[in-house]
Image 1 (spheres, rainbow, N blue to C red):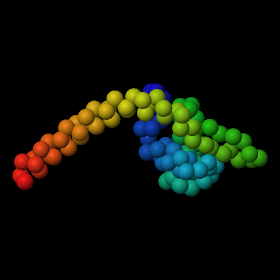
Image 2 (image 1 turned 180 degrees about the vertical axis):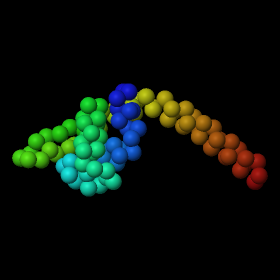
Image 3 (image 1 turned 90 degrees about the vertical axis):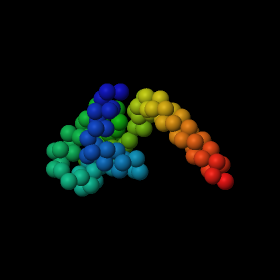
Image 4 (image 1 turned 180 degrees about the horizontal axis):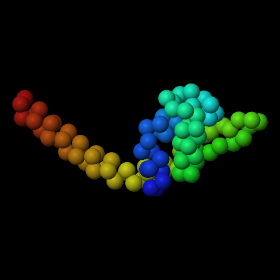
Length: 105
């Protein structure tokens, strides 16, 4: 999970993942979407591949990158505890607001 979180820490890599969430893309297409040089994009793609967040398949002279959402499952499960914490607090806030409205009417 640490490799995934470290990969997600970079805004350029998050941009790449956002693009790949919608569709597979070539390294060139991803480079066009980022304000960095192609070697930088290649380094970001390597980090994402090593973290298991993307896969690459060869198609003629191009590599097509695809998102691997299953790599985010462990992070999602870890965040679940925090979501439950906030949900409990929001539920309590909702209850207090409802009580306040009943008290004013």
